[in-house]
Image (tube, rainbow over the protein chains, first blue to last red):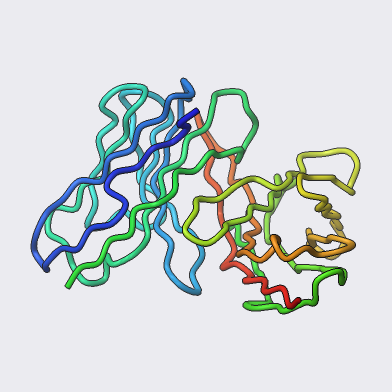
Length: 114
Length: 115
């Protein structure tokens, strides 16, 4: 079972470049999330999508955009990357009715912005 | 606002020794509390959760946690640590609202296991 798949796993960008992180889940989950993980700061929510066609801002949305393409896929876009966006990004998903917080995580995408 | 505090950034224990990782939360209502584990280079995996009822909850890999409302704590314990338990551990509280919910994570505790 693949679960939650993120691509790419590693990426190096120059300041000002754009890129999209892809996330797909094969568990038929309704809700999907993007978090970033930084040393000493835990995981912080960037955006989430309660269901197909809806997206909402999390704690740190500035500099990011998201698209819930269909039920399976939830992408995160950096339009003009900045060094402050160097981080490890995690996508997660949750089934409806599973109870609050039972998230399934991908393996992460490590992004470096020079 | 909801928040989670993990006061220990880094803990080292000997293999076979007992373990307790601390977690304190701030939440206005009955909290939904979780512990996740992250092995190096991996995503997070749910260890256990507390929603209601029995305040001592059992999880995977021999872990347990106790919810203490009076102390606003949800500490993670294991009686005998194995080398494979070396990882980073995150406590989280669910901020439940609307059509979905959001997890608020602590900053994590990195566990090292000495042979």
